[in-house]
Each structure stands twice: as structure tokens, then as C-alpha cells.
Length: 209
Image (cartoon, rainbow, N blue to C red):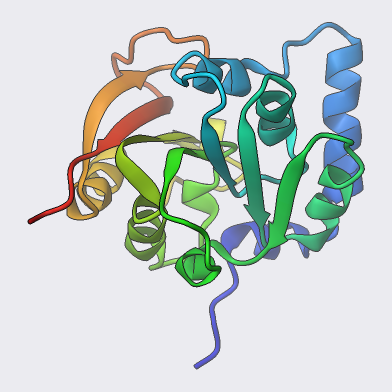
């Protein structure tokens, strides 16, 4: 069976890594904070935590966390994005793979956090969200956190409409043994009260006896 393309590859053709990296480098040069996602995650972690950056792109989150003492693995299907990530001297293990296949990569299921930033969830291939969330959750230790931020309307997405809502995502998380512990409107931590973007923190419960 042919695997469906994810929405990101349909949008970019897998050739946007350099352009994406240059865009964020220019934002950083103009004083824009490009590390809000990483700082949000870092505030939830103990020193030396093990982190999986799922859909890592050019590696902004994983590199910042690695530079701040965490042990990071980045996974992305886009070779052009990973080529940019690998330019960093940070001690991060980079893996090219579709997130649908993350459970088959041989990673130890002891991550303290899985980060799913940058609209990864709505840009998954249609019909694969529940499978991906379950696979990522299976790599968390009991008490580990899954942190995801994504747009909920066209204004916050590179799409004409949002293919995933919070009710969908929460249902996928619940089915994977994850419970919501925090929801914010931004990566700066403002409480969520509705709107077109949300950052959700879910926790993995203890395994069933």
C-alpha cells in the first residue's frame, strides 16, 4: 500500500529547508524571539532530560534544548530540513523518517518529553493523526510530557482550513494514554481561552497492569 504524502510535503515538495532556515535567521537578526517554543519546553524539564523533537524541521527546538543540557533526538521526513539541522554543531541525533514510522525506529521508550511544534499535527498526512500520536506517546516514560502547538484556523496555518481541532487531538491523546495537564494560547504561556492557536501539554499515565 502506498503511504499518503503528508500535507507538509504536498505544500513544499520537500525542497524548503534552506528557505525556512534563512527566514528564521533573518527574524533572529531583527530581534524576533525564535526560541519561545524551546524555552516553554525547557521550563517543564528537569536538567539533562531526554527529548524527542518530532517533526524537528531545521532543528531550532532540539538545538536550543541540547545547548541547554538536554539529550535530544530530532526526527523529520524532509531531507532538506534535516540538511539544515545537521549544520548545527549541537549534540543531537538526527533521523530521517516519517512520524507514522517512529515506533519502528528502535528508540528506547524512555523520553521525558516529546515536542511536536511548528504545526506538525495539522500537517500530517490525512487520516494518520491518531496513529502518530499513539506512536509518539509510546516512546514516553510514565509521567513524560507530550507538548504540541498548532493552528486551529486558516490564519494560523499554511492551509485554507484547519484539518484538526482540539477535540480531535485530545481524543487521540486520551486513546494513547495521555491526559491534558495544561493548555496555553501561545508559547509564552498565556492561558488558552479560545482562539486560533493552542499549545497543549499532555502527560503519559502509568502503564496498565
